[in-house]
Image (cartoon, rainbow, N blue to C red; front, side):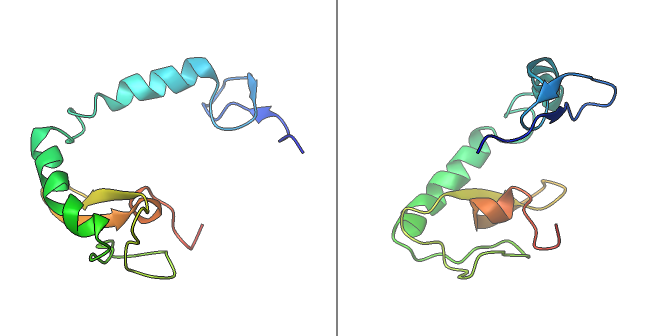
Length: 108
């Protein structure tokens, strides 16, 4: 069954969308966020992620998220993961399940 239409999530925009923002406000939001490098995901981040990759791919790493939301803390072979960092982005915590890293919380 198709999702019902709703108003764009950007305040004051009357455009109807199935989810999130209209194309115009999606582009504007992405531009305002900056590039991945501007957000702190440059060469140092890539090196640290590559350093962790072999152990994660062998299934040897537990999720480093302080609020892991998965039934099992261990990151399974083939499971999507991100390199987690502290809120101030000054240091990395380690590999995290993608769901744990990208803001999903049980209290939502």
